[in-house]
Length: 330
Image (cartoon, rainbow, N blue to C red):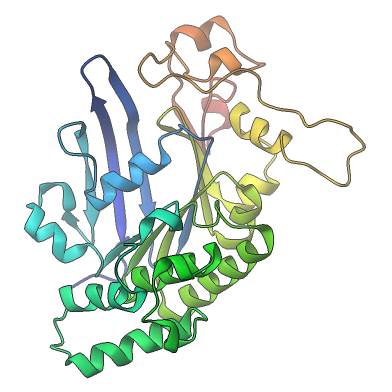
């Protein structure tokens, strides 16, 4: 029986690598993360920061023969998912852990009606021994829940717009009412109007079903709207974490977080150009020594180039940067 006082998910010192014929890619480096019940965590960072790899590792979906968890634990209600056999992990996937993948265009099988794809999840996790009629009724309920007329369930993915495809993907992900939903940039392929509708729908469904969520995005506006806490990821590491108030209203930030905020268009600032973060994201197959952000950091010192920073905390707000020392910790 689960303990309601226990975090739903605890990631401890997780390291993930990709081994190819020519390169060793260090995609996730000693990441620790906690997700509480009914909480939404925003995982923020540029493309290539390791966000999707972290999500795939949590789901046990790293590419076979290439991706490998080198160290760490992924505890879901106290059970280490990394120690489960694939058959046992299948019982978790879709039922208690579910994921919305980045591209709705490629997440659906093009030759199977969308209703059947929602029903498939219910059939695989049919512990309540639902009849065919009950499963069909549940599919209809899920389509209504995500704003799709149930009579469209016998249509195929090519008959749906991008926004409607994403709604189908969300219906599949939530069909078994999972305890944790991982949303990997679920609105990236959508236009702004549909994006707002999908985010509003996801927020409503989260409240209705009591689902915890990891929202992976590079859009800080989505984080402000959807999340309770935030983890900023760079070069496979979490360089800053805290509550939404810590990240958006706090006085101290990691230089990378400052750069992310500085590159956002603002109507209250009179400027003709955005302020991008200089340089390119660190190559995970050849990470810089010391602080991995130092080649792009305007505050970098010799210490930054040779020594990895420790994490210093002010209550829930944690920053990994040499600019903040032990005198700043509480």
